[in-house]
Structure formats: structure tokens, C-alpha cells
Image (tube, rainbow, N blue to C red; front, side, top):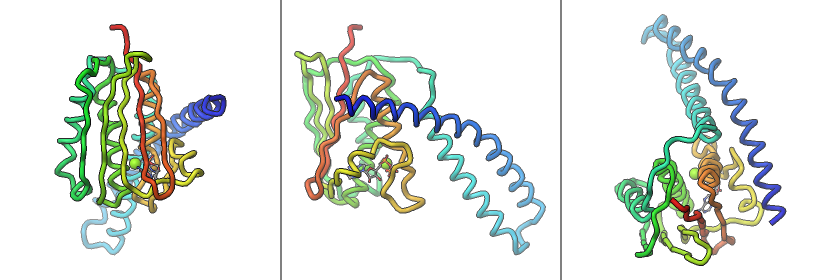
Amino acid sequence: MEEQLIRSERLAATGKLAFDIAHEVNNPLGGILTYAHLMQEDLGATSELTPTVDKIIKLTNRCKIIVRGLLDFARQDTPEKEPMDLNRVLEEVVSLMEGHMILRKVELHRDLAPDLPMLWGQRAKVEQVFLNLIINAAEAMEGQGRLEMTTRHHPKTREVSITFTDTGPGMDEETARRVFEPFFTTKPRGRGTGLGLAISHGIVQQHGGRVELNTRPGMGSTFRIIFPVGDS
Ligand code: ADP
Ligand code: MG
């Protein structure tokens, strides 16, 4: 418990630092892009430097995407909250994803609680969390396996939970300990930003909830999100 507290404080501090850096880096990045585009125009299509400038633009755009992710992750303002039916939110994310390449050979199973109370929150953010967990599971299973999604109502603790259980390779202890850190990734360079779970963790916390991870090498992974049921 105490260890978890320290970890979440450290995560918050890391998030603040990341936000400050992203903020500072954003402007010069914009400048680099502008100058690179000017250079691209000056050179025209025939110069032998053109492919090099194109590369600069491509890589700078990638930096911008990372910076954008960080700024979204650490954003302080809280957009409007609205009533959410988590079963419906999950269904919508799944139907959005079902045609996706990476999910082609993933069996998706749902076990949705019929008595799920409405929650009060930022629907678009919660969609992002579900999306991240589904994509991560699919990537871990290398596009082949079974992903079980379950929603439950816990009236005694006044909570709602959503679990994502995959049949992927699971994680060793060291990896499991670090997955929520910003920029932690085991994916090849250029594939993963390592921000998905850090962002998701932040969103769940903003909703007063928590994320639990249960995993072992060779045993798949289960991410469990727990949201409190509010009074309104
Ligand atoms: P990214 O997907 O860009 O690597 P994430 O924050 O989404 O960043 O995930 C961080 C790391 O957590 C991944 O690189 C992977 O090592 C591990 N991970 C996340 N989800 C799973 C999963 N379902 N099974 C196994 N490993 C996972
Ligand atoms: Mg990810």
C-alpha cells in the first residue's frame, strides 16, 4: 500500500517534469518544422538534399506527436463530465476497433454486467483508456489470441470494475513494476512511445479510480480498472 503510494507520487512528479519539458520543446519543434518546410520549397523536388529534408520533417512530426501525447497526458484542466454507461462505452470502442488490422485474429469476448450503474466522467478519455488496453493486448499477443473483457458492479464497495484479460506472453516482475511509467516501452524504437499506460493511469486517477495489474510470464495479463460510483 505504502509502496503504491510512493510510486504514484513519483509518477505524478515525473508527469509534471514531462509536462514542463514537453511545453518547452513544443515551440522550437514548431520552428524546426517551419524552417524545414521553407527549405523543402526552396530545394524543389530535384535537389539531392530533398530526401534528407523530408526525413527531418518526418522525424520532427514524430516528435510533435510524442510531445502532444505528453501534453494531453499531463493536462491540468478537466473537461466537462457527463453520464457514462461503461458497457456502452466499451461496446463502442470494440466496434470501432473490430475492423482494425491488428485485431484480425484476436478473439474478443465480452461479459457485461446487466446491473452496471451509470458513472459520471469524461467519456472520450475513458474511451482512450479502453483503446490503449485493447491495442496493448493485441500487440502483446502479436495479433493472435483471446481478449476477455468483463464489467462488474460491486455494490458493497460502491465500485465498478472493468477487466481486460489476454492470453499474451505476460510480463516479468520488473516490467510489470514499470509499465505505468511515462516512456517505458519494450517495443522496438519507432513502434511504442511508452505513453499509453501512463496516460491511461492518469485518466483513471482523474476519475478517482485505480488500475491493478495481474500478470506472470507465460500466464497472460489482466488489467483491472476500478471506478468509484459517484453520488450524482
Ligand atoms: P507502448 O505500448 O507504447 O510500449 P504502453 O504504456 O502502452 O506503451 O505499454 C508499456 C509496456 O507495457 C509495453 O511496451 C509492454 O512491454 C507492456 N505491456 C502493456 N500491455 C501489455 C500486455 N497486455 N501484455 C504484455 N505486456 C504489456
Ligand atoms: Mg501502448
